[in-house]
Image 1 (cartoon, rainbow, N blue to C red):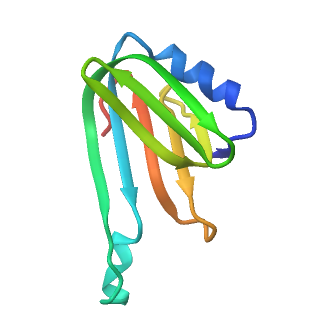
Image 2 (cartoon, rainbow, N blue to C red):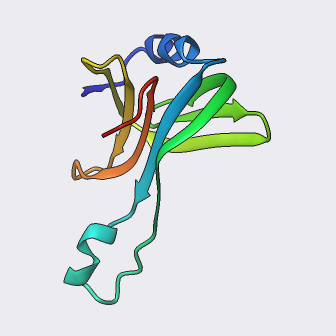
Image 3 (tube, rainbow, N blue to C red):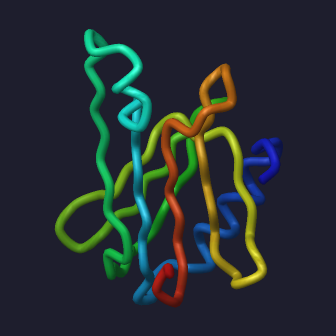
Length: 116
C-alpha cells in the first residue's frame, strides 16, 4: 500500500464502483487483537466482510488522515482515519488507516467480487 498523496486518484477509484453491486469489507480496531497484553485497556472494534451494497456516490475528504463516505439507499457507510490505499491485482480498492506505530486501525475495501 502507498500513502494517500493525491486524494483525486482515490476519488476516481471510488467513483468507478458507484451504482454497481459491490462487496464491502470494513474493519476498525483500537487494539482488540492485543488487549490480552494489558487487561486494563478497553478495546473496541467493528467488522463486516462481504456486505453486498450499491452506493449512489462516494467521497473522500479531509487531509491526512482522510475520511471516505459511501451513500447507500438508506444511509451511509463511513470510514475515518485512512492513510494508505492501493488498487490490487483483482481490481479491488483497498484503503487502510495506520496509527503512528504502523498498526492497522481501520480498513475499507471495495470489490466487484466477494473477498476470500
